[in-house]
Amino acid sequence: MLRYTAGVILLGLGLTLTPQLPAQDSLDNLAEELVRLRGEVETLNSQLNSLTEQHRAEMNALAAQKGDLEATARREDLRIRQLEQDLADNRERANEAGLAGEALIPVAQAVIADLASLIQTGLPFKVEERLDALSGLRSQLETGAQAPPRIINRLWSFYEDELRLTRENGLHTQVIPLGGQRVLADVVKLGTVAMYFQTRDGRSGQVVRQGDRWRFETLEAASDIDQIATLFDSMQKQIRSGYFELPNGSIALESAP
Image: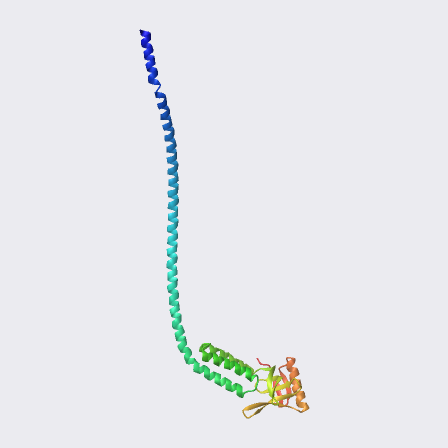
């Protein structure tokens, strides 16, 4: 009886313990899954924190760039306003200069006319070239190609050149009217006092004044031709000062300063 009871008890214990083994495995699996999930959560949380810091850094950088751009925009706006003011000031000065320039037009015209008259009645040295230069200034003045103040400055330079011609002695080449023809000749200009010439065909002569006009006159006397030859030879050797016997008498030349 006792053996039977003990056997029954052992059988009962066996039946009781056998279903608990799969439950323990399930708990272990759940624990492992929990650990894995917790690791993933920590990883994701770490990634989230990293992305949050990155986003914060990018936002700070964008905020700094925005501040720089706003500062640059303010500076550019200030510069534009300054340029606009400068432009307005320059326009006002240009208008004032234009008014002053208008008043200079008759002055420039009068100076051009006076210089042209002096050239036409003076020693016939490169008259056409000098008159052409004046004509160009007159054209620029009339068409507005150059502002009147600039024309006045150029006329002053032109006047200085004309004044220098009165002091200079030199050897030049120009076309002269001779015997009803236009002939290329070498000329020696002695200030505005006298001018002598030699043509390429061997003729020599001087400029002679008749009333308000000048003419080129060929000389025939051997002594006159020799004197002119000596003058030209000295000028070719850069001897521009000294005492010379010339057809119009003796003359002492000095180099221009």
